Amino acid sequence: MKNEQKMKSLSRMMALFMLAVALSLSGAAAWADEDDKGYSHDPKSRLEKLTKKLSLTQEQQDKILPIIEEKHQKMEALHEQMKEMRQAAMGKIEAELTPEQQAKWKEMQEERQEKMKEYKEKHGDCDKKDKHGKGEKHE
Image (cartoon, rainbow, N blue to C red; front, side, top):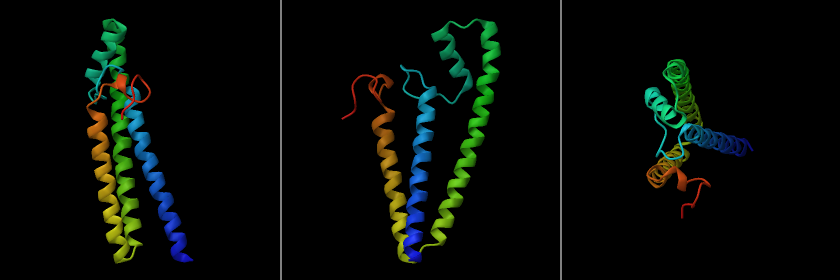
């Protein structure tokens, strides 16, 4: 029964981890422009895009840039915290596994990384207009 509980707990943690990854990806996409190919991590580049789309005045740009920079710094800090939490959780999970389970766990991690790589290759090179309900769907 104890192993059964561990496996349920492991399944829940993996589900939460995958949800966190999905939310991270969707959050980045929310800041991207429709006609861009991805999210720019550079606040000045983001401001340029907003200026172009919204015809911002210099005064507006001067006020908006610090807002974007602050958001960027906070997001980077959160990203780093999430990375550290993920690594700590993964280490704790692995410590609870038998050597046979650890081997399978590592295999699962490699499969997950490969799927993420494939996803990025498939979706990273596409126009936003063709993604996620905006026009044609991927096949």
